[in-house]
Amino acid sequence: MRFLTITTASIAAAAFMLTSPVTEAAGPLVIKFSHVVAENTPKGQMANKFKELVEQRLPGKVKVEVFPNTQLFDDDAVLSAMLLGDVQLAAPSLSKFDKYTSQLPVFDLPFLFKDMAAADRFQQSPAGQKLLMSMEKKGLIGLGYLHNGLKQLSANKPLKTPADAKGQKFRIQQSDVLAAQFEAVGAVPLKKAFSEVFTLLQTRAVDGQENTWSNIYSQKFHEVQSYITESNHGLIDYMVVTSASFWNGLPADIRGEVKKALDESIAHGNNVAMEKELGDRKKVADSGRTQIIQLTDAERAQWVEAMKPVWKKFEKDIGKELIEAAAAANTGS
Ligand code: SIN
Image (cartoon, rainbow, N blue to C red; front, side, top):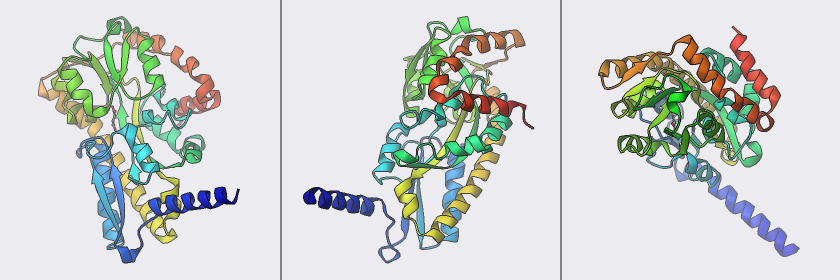
């Protein structure tokens, strides 16, 4: 028993050393921020702003290293790397946490939010804020939400009604809700990393994908997809996360400054997201490389009806009350 106590204590001490900040004498504390998108996206701009603000306000004390474009980890690997202390900040899409919590997949329910204002209202509501701590027991803390935008459907054939998607292979993020969404229209979902999507589309290993205008434009998906249906059927937003041991191990004054810089860089990223939703849509339209399809009300209603059973399917896992709270954000002002 004594042996066990000593061993546990030494493991705990080793874990603390692995994840604790470096002292000032040993040089500045380094925060590694890993993400998978390009620098000219809401998340890329937010991460760069965070570096700028932190290094301006905590000179010599904290250094931020940003790794965009999956240079360090993909979204699947980044959370386990974070728990090991190999990276301190990340902002995976809300669709990438289902190994850690059954609640965050609420954000993947199809046609949940009518617009970004509704998504924002839910995120800022008590129920949305509570979700930031939903993975605390697993060692992860959410520090805030960051917007990207609503998702559009792209393919090499026009997708006007759910019947058009039948049998088509779609790349999806790591999310069972998203898999069920495509299965509901008879399509074949394939979970693949973001860094692989362009090649999968270019080589026609998959027929289509779903993403926001800024991701479509920055990754050039529109150059290898003949049609984009402006479906606005789902959301890609992010949770900025860190490990509880890293965050709680920071000296209080440093933690306060870092959090302030983070909040300001999230506000900056949200402005970029708003501009890009329109701006990158226009760039895609002006490129002439793809055709943007507008749905009629009747066509859109068919997609909603076909995908709506997904809500019921995940109600038990996500929680009825949480789903209702999210849907209620559509009626707020
Ligand atoms: C991201 O925006 O971070 C990636 C989204 C995706 O995997 O499609």
